[in-house]
Amino acid sequence: MRTKCEQVILSFLPLLRALVARELVENYNLKQMEAAKLLGVTQAAISQYLRGMRGKGKVNESLAELAKRIAAKLARGEINVEEDICSYCRSRRDAKS
Image (cartoon, rainbow, N blue to C red):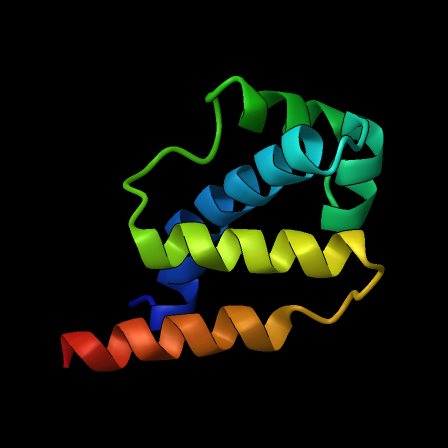
């Protein structure tokens, strides 16, 4: 049995990381290594996100906005984005109930 949070970890987080990685590299002009450090992943993972090898999935407008908001925070040096992610997941889960 998997909890809702486990399901998020397996599908949602890789997609969100891919969107945030793209945002950081393309719109904030960070190097892959810099984006990797901010996201807590390897440079190779960033490369795979950018090439579409990881983090595939359906992107809706609210998810794209979340990715932009998180990328902006990370680019400003804010490292606490957990509440943004949890809040988004809760709102999606509540909408499905």
